[in-house]
Length: 43
Length: 513
Image 1 (cartoon, rainbow over the protein chains, first blue to last red):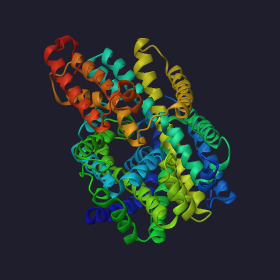
Image 2: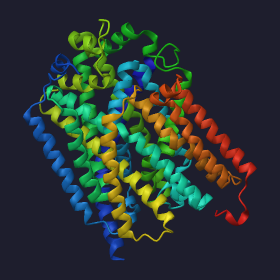
Image 3: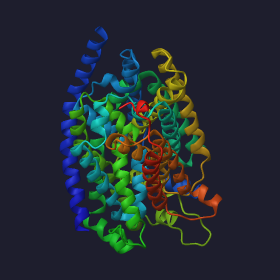
Image 4: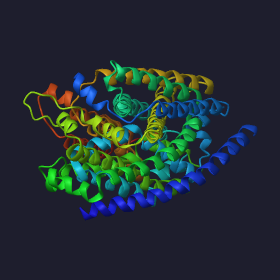
């Protein structure tokens, strides 16, 4: 029981941190994606 | 479903405001598909987003694809029936995905080769015959695997929104969702897929955390564990207990599934092949291992909470799912989690969660539809036509196949009558492809003597997995656990790869690597 409590709480904490990071950095990646695709089309 | 049962599970907090939130979200998704359409010029744009996806977006899109509504539903079902013991599946997924990321096992080499699909790798390593057979096996196993997605996802909508007392609600919801997902997958391809995956990641990840917090507040942290202990005993916590829902062979099977789900499963591999470099693949997998843990862990917990809710707070519903009278049929336990959420979440938040779940549903469907249709186009039809198909013809064929597969999943969701848990159904149907693919990829990437005959025999061995489906077992008059059938299939595929390669080595000029 203790193992699953630890796994669950740690999992939630790490996921919460990752969700914030992916939300911010992912938006930046979308801008780069558009820029790179447009650049490759021009070439 | 009896009228009484339909009436009981239709009592939810879902309001017109929630329908408004759902509708607004869906309109935004279709708009993204339309915008992304302008960016598509080549097949690489359509299938791999121009191979220009960064790490964070790679994690978002990997999570968006793998954390679908179907995942939430089948995981909740496992948590509902197996208790905390089901958590071992999440732990296995986390460990294997992290190890694949840290080592680069399979995925690093595949990305470095710059192939678009796994069957394309088969051709480079083993020749065209292997590519075509690999494509057929992949599409067959994959399409069968997603056959119940639409039905299960629609059950969530019906359960949480209280539509169960409306006649014909399930097929109507299935049709609406299918039309929606087809429209923007056909329009946008992979570029719209990665963007909608990102939006889904944002909406869903925060919804998951919020709903989990509310469930704990409503039921009580210690009460959840105490109720499972009282109702299920040790088997509610220990997956190795033989009389429980799992057992040792099941746990081993889950570790193998964890490995193939991230290292061989084509929708995950498609994400690996879309990122901007092989080094990014490793980072993407190590970060995504957390998503692979959470995508199971939180829905299991919701399923467990639904069980605790029925036991401690909703005796009427409990009788519906666990009838004591002889001859009465138990309610489909897939409805337990959405009904639970519909009763504990406030109006407004239910709409947001439902929108997030529909987003999850759509992002899984678009990725899977795109994956299987592009495999048939790129790896079966195009090689059979001598690679003479033009880029526009390939994109059009892929779009037609997306619609055809969509119609199939509508049909299959309405007619399939198997009694397997959804997760076990998916494991077995997926095994038709991934058992052979695992042997072929590992052999091809890491063993110089692997031959095309060995690869073909290993791929064909995947058909043994069909024996794990309950309708097939009924036909054969046997009763085997899906885990045993899966592990036997893995063993046969690996054996066939080795024996076939040793007995029939490729002639030197046929080797392409």
